[in-house]
Length: 186
Image 1 (spheres, rainbow, N blue to C red):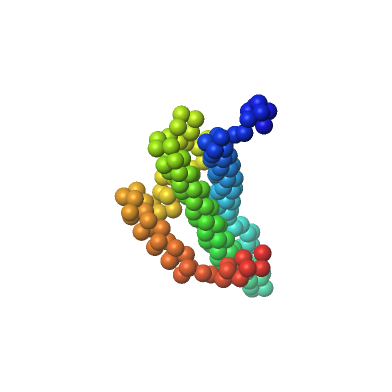
Image 2 (cartoon, rainbow, N blue to C red):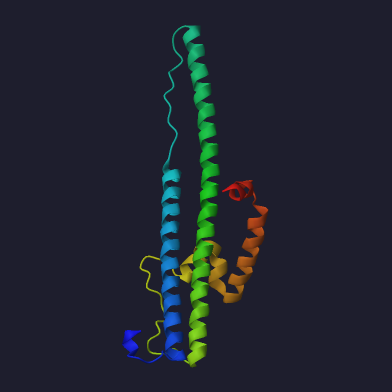
């Protein structure tokens, strides 16, 4: 490298560059995961606000018109029920995707914590060039992601958060609604 002016990089210089590049990759991953989470949350809000609408004529006039009106009302009622069921199913799938995305964000934060611990352990203390935070404006923090995932269970103690994560993993296994085969074919 021309900056070194003819000398080889020392192991410490190579290490500092390596961990700085790893931190940058983690920041990049966190930003991507946050964008994906935001996209999913936008889909959830749009689906939650969607509503069924149908015009149904009133049952007036002769019996033939009244029967046609009642048939239209029945059809509208059935269509509304189908719409509500599909909406609930789609929201359930979106919420699962949101939880998976939050878990991915927690994983990225844990990856950064491990890197930070590695750097601190290597030098005995954090060196002056090391940033102990990630530059990701708008990304959920580890605490925010865990709070969204685990609610009050995550806020109590660190041990409880781990217990909550283990319990959630068990619940996720039990909640299989047939999505597994879809993922296998993607």
